[in-house]
Length: 394
Image 1 (cartoon, rainbow, N blue to C red):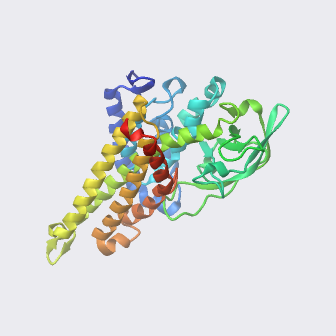
Image 2: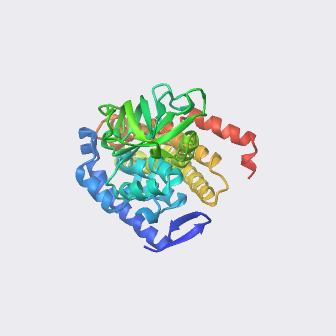
Image 3: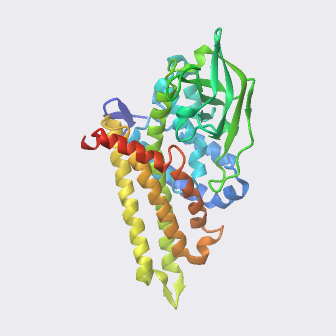
């Protein structure tokens, strides 16, 4: 597979090959995944055939560098791919999202060469599922409050604590576990990240949660009871954990913004079709100006979000902005999605409240995007701090 380097330090796939990837994914999503959305909703599970076919397409490693078996997409290509992945139930993307995103990127950006050689090819192929074990019951949007501890004991560290809402925990092979290694440190200091195989003695993964939406995307609680890992399993050196977490989350926020664009695109497409086919008083409801106004607002906000995400992704790739753009993209796109989903239900009327209607499911799916990987409130704080530093002038 040939590649070029459109941005310094950010290799990406050549455009012709990438267009082929996009076309393949678009066809697969719309012809194979969309028709099975109700099945996924009812069983709360992604079918095994979809898992296997996704691995064959390379979807478990689109953001993993080519030298480790991935596709090596840059941030702009990641966003454009997410537009397509977001067109269906978000649990489809969630199946391999942590491999490419918040978990895999910790290893890509901070792992030793030995750690990368051992794990990244397995992650890229789908042989291994990686989970990002950061969130705790009392440390969510502000991870500086985490209490999981890792204590040095000879050549090992012993980890004790628990994590909450960890995506793909039940499916995971390896965990990126954030723990406090300096017991006297507070806030963002003294936090390190460890590569912990899920099968390690003392690791217990709870049953997956029952959620409002996003059925098939499993999140669970994880408990660590005297889990012993070699000191060599520390990623990036002592006290690099908070920095690694923030860097991974910033990249992830761009991806989530792009996913919201994909979700809103699906809602708008289905809502337009409904408006053209549903009738009141013998006329399609698409003839009514108040319905037209809702469709117009959906499209306008969706187009604005798409442009913001793509611009932010390009600035990520050229290195000019890796904080303001990602937070702005996630904030605007996730809030936009909520409004588009609400309008979609409204235009569908009573049918929009029925479980078999796509907009009902996407309305529930949409609510989570304003919470995970940094709430809307956290994004506003990040944006304001960057603006006060003058980042908006760059």
